[in-house]
Length: 506
Image (tube, one colour):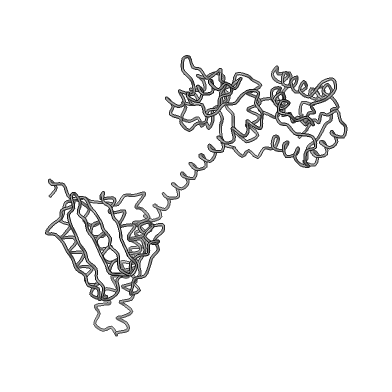
């Protein structure tokens, strides 16, 4: 790439040229403004100018002004910038705010103070000619009457990799914003072009198009507080005042563009995670049959072997171990499959009216074998009846899980009590144990499948650590709720509330 270095000081030209050549750029030199403009006309492949401000005969402002006039008039073509604007970096020893305003007004791209640190100029040139395009993928809709301002804004945004779509009237901008296939991340519009008859484009974007998150930057000719307030009321996000100072422009726009970039990344990640989640569900569904089928064979054979009359005591113990391990593995498979699909695929629930007391007694009878074997006393306090409208299999699973959990964490000689009462429009089931209890810090996230860890019971019983998460999900699917109170060393109480059946149900 070729850079024209314009400075009446020979030493400055050599310093600038040496730094640019160290970055791989080819350099040309001009000692004054007239020579610079002649070289621009004779060397159409110049990519960038570094331009001193204070030069005899024609200062840098005048050189840049004439260059921009030529570009607007189409006097020469071939610049790499898509808008036909050659980047101009003012390199000056007199760097003031007024000077920068004047420079940006005539079309400066960047400013740099003489005496700059080694590598600073090269960094600016690389950012312009070899941009990292940090905001690549974002699109700005630009509605600006002044072609020079359009070109400068497009050049600035291009340094960040932002695509610019320029339109020439508010109606065209409105049509483009209404297009669902057009991705627009920011609207920059000239204050004088915001009107669509008696309507304001900002108001239409916020109202009819419901684009509450789209940044709208209004470019004004003066800083008027009353006018700015009216723009903000209409829906503007921010205002910029001409002439545009690059540092201010970058600082203001970058905030909004960065938010849009992060939002885009977040949406892409959400889509990606949804695809991964779908693949996970497909994998679980595919594995379900393949995992259960061989395990059913193992359990079936071990059940048959356990009734064989010719087994030695050691062999019978081995068969019992195989059976217990197989049953635990089957429980683990069921829990993993249920947890893996509880968000994406609702449980297959078949609601019907039945007596919760009857189901409670059945679950207690089933759990009694485990309690007796461990030496835990199991008692019940149940009403005559308590009708609920629910999925019977799910309610059995809820009750069974709470009872077996209570027995699991209760030492021999302890007790587990199941109580059921009807309170207003709910059937409340409590399972209370005198077991080890739960530490306060472990109560947080107790029902969260992402935090819960499997804990062995008081007799070394194994578990998946997923049962309570499934219980909570099932209870909530029925419109109920679950809560727990516990004191370490004194036991725990789990309470499940399920809606009563309507009067006409049973």
